[in-house]
Length: 398
Ligand SMILES: NC(=O)c1ccc[n+]([C@@H]2O[C@H](COP(=O)([O-])OP(=O)(O)OC[C@H]3O[C@@H](n4cnc5c(N)ncnc54)[C@H](OP(=O)(O)O)[C@@H]3O)[C@@H](O)[C@H]2O)c1
Image (tube, rainbow, N blue to C red):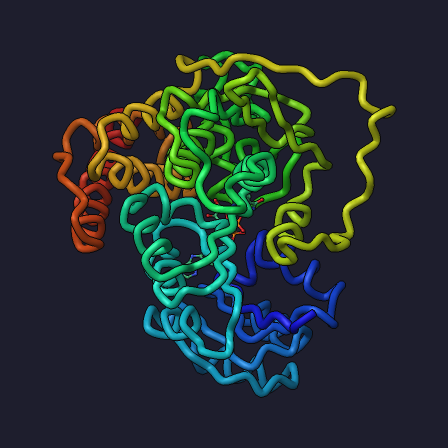
């Protein structure tokens, strides 16, 4: 078994730390080459020292000196890089076989694309890069022969339920539907009127998964499922109408694929991100992820509900943006990031998150996606417009 040399973009986050946990269980298989963070210098330095990383990058370049000092304190001699250029260098290090894309949000796009351009094995958690730049991203993967493995639990489940995909492409007429499951988040059974004054802490208290704050809010609005619909479209080449969101509160079935003959294949497991991460790290082999066995006898029931598009308009907006095409998904993603950040800062009520996205989608013109510059320009425009809507919403609420 050749040693796999791994770099993790976003190592200090929830996915980054779960990845390091799996890697640490298999020192004979994986070696950590590089770790990155945005601002958590002490965490990053500790992780570099613990896992023997030889490169460290801090995205906020003003923290370089602080990182150097912390690395020395923790006894690490890792080479220090910084800023966007540093992230791009880490993504392309010749001594790395596998890049884990675990930065949250649009900041992950360029480094993730850089790894794809270099034909790396790419473990994709950063769904925002596919939502923003789906056609360019997939073309880059194809052109440069990168091995793209999804670690978002649903997409990893779908990948596992599509054995044909492992040998190339799945003929489109074989698949009838993708059944994309989601827990429904912490507000699944709350009336919309009851959500007016929910706090960031309530929104981040996910019933089944422990995740970063941005994706936790996305789960509470169900925009996370909307982003995943777009992600599934690009990863698996299915039309929007072939993707059915299924609310499954127990988070045991991580998604399903229904074939033309009526067969439905599902992947089950405890809700623990170490399972999809280990599957992708070791693919096509299987390794221990530290995840306990699924207790089938301890489960009272597995239940399924249709999603409520009125209570969770973010999901409807995501389908609409996917059908509109061009830069519409880029605009949706940017407006969502601005609105979620404002909500987490206490500047925007929860129910206004979808208002900001809706108004931005209606006002920022959709353009064709011919290049990454088109994507970045649409992202900039949408952020600027969404920030204005946040400002107006504040005065409406006040
Ligand atoms: N958590 C999950 O269970 C889960 C499941 C499926 C998919 N995902 C996806 O995985 C990605 C990461 O999610 P997460 O929950 O792990 O997020 P998280 O806990 O918030 O961690 C985000 C990571 O990205 C870094 N980062 C944040 N902003 C950055 C920037 N502008 N430039 C460079 N690095 C930056 C953070 O550094 P600092 O620590 O310094 O801030 C941290 O290392 C997201 O795209 C999410 O949708 C997550």
